[in-house]
Image (cartoon, rainbow, N blue to C red; front, top):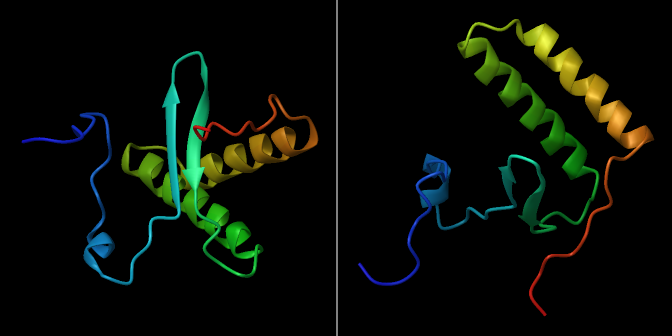
Length: 100
């Protein structure tokens, strides 16, 4: 009733979030015509774990598109192509949006 109102555009919280050991590590928001904004927690001592997470995210996205009728292999190829393009020639520079 009181406090911060949940955004109606927020995704559902996954079941694992109910676990006392679970930690949210990444939240990303996007709006038309604006750069995405995100918050993250470094979480792992090994930064390479983020590579594993990013691949998992890409595969989950491909599965979501497959549920809408797309070929998951084509989706993954497109994700990889734009990942490589953005890596080689960034369209923007990350900026800290944390309030001072």
